[in-house]
Length: 120
Picture 1 (spheres, one colour):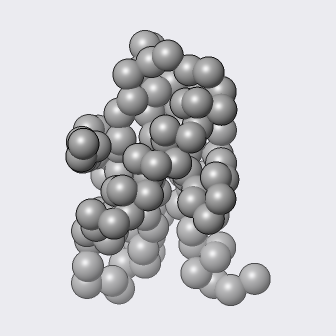
Picture 2 (spheres, rainbow, N blue to C red):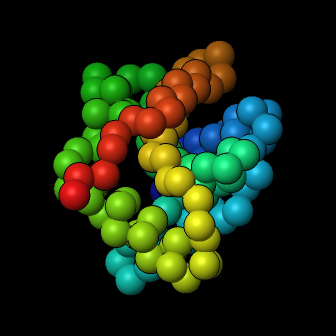
Picture 3 (cartoon, rainbow, N blue to C red):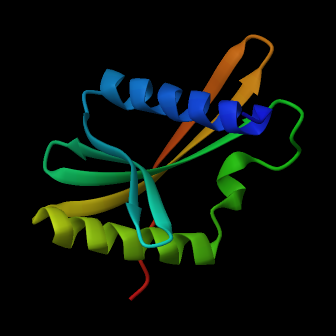
C-alpha cells in the first residue's frame, strides 16, 4: 500500500479516537454513496456530525482544511443527504473538518466544528 494511503488511514483512525474522546458516538466510517464518501459520521447528542478528515505530512505547505473547497463541500452535502435518507435519521446535521498533520512527534489534530454550512 502506498505511503499516502497509510497516512490517510492513520489520520482517520486518530480522528475517530478524537471524536470518541469528545463523547461522540461513531455511526459509520467510509460510508459510500455512488462515487461519494463520508469519512466519519458521528452523533453528538442531538446532532449528526459529518466529519471530513484531511491528513498531511509535516512537510506540506497547504493546511489540510484548505483542500475542502466548494465542490468538495457540495459532494459532502449530497452524500450526507443520502445518508440521512438511507438511515431514516431526523437530526440536525453539522459539517466538521478534522485536519491532521503528521509530525516527527506524532499527530497534531485541529478539529473545526461547523466548518461550513450547506448552500441552498
